Length: 169
Image 1: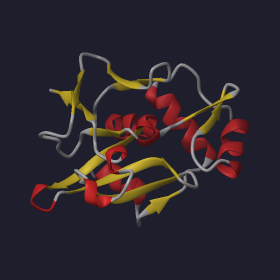
Image 2 (image 1 turned 180 degrees about the horizontal axis):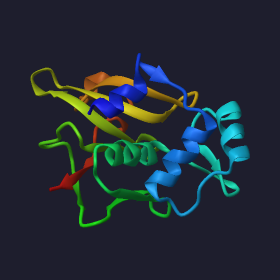
Image 3 (image 1 turned 180 degrees about the vertical axis):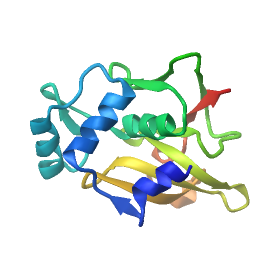
Image 4 (image 1 turned 30 degrees about the vertical axis):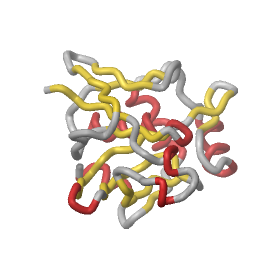
């Protein structure tokens, strides 16, 4: 998942307006931000993007961009917020975190956030990810627990991975 890590190098990266537009175009979304919307997004919003008079989160769109660069033809639907395969690629949604691996696009319930899994360490209950659409409009490399327990704080349930998308080859 070198493509994902490249975007987050050296730990975080704020895209240019043209790059944000490109993420939407490459993900094949139903609507794409204008240059004015992309500039306004990156200057004013903490996360999300102005698109067609509304605000849309671009974490899943960024994940599609990463997969596209890895040679996988996928798209993102804004209506329902999900990934779809194209050109014969099949995308499977798997509930929970069992057997998650690098290259999968995980989902956590908090804000229905999507991110690309770049490394897994089951022995230490950790994964590394690259996330688009984070606070301040950054793409960030992050380390996360795979599963949280009740001891990890009051909002632990909202941070557990509740599913992931996998490309079937």
